[in-house]
Length: 105
Image 1 (tube, rainbow, N blue to C red):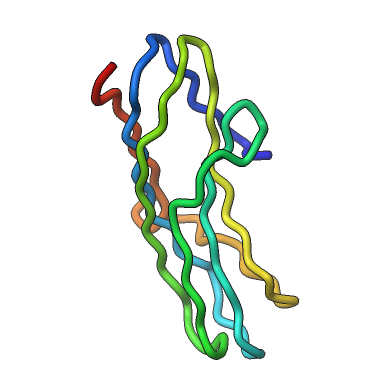
Image 2: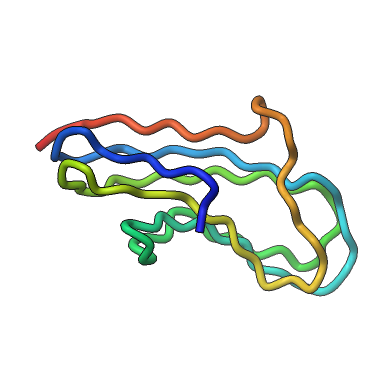
């Protein structure tokens, strides 16, 4: 799972927005990239999908969604791809961030 978790302190709907950037380019065949919200360790929602015909440049991705959480329920985000190449994330906070806010009941 994710190295961090967001745990709601109050029940309600929460907006989740993220931006991710891979650290390095790789060459290869077509690849799919996805970002998922995991809720209490279970995949709950896909918030990004993209397919590239080849892996020739650093890729940036954004995703957003709304998820209902009970008080003390936790979520984390996971970046997945079907590539055999290593697509680790860039280490800069400007390129990679998550914003979560409660937006309703």
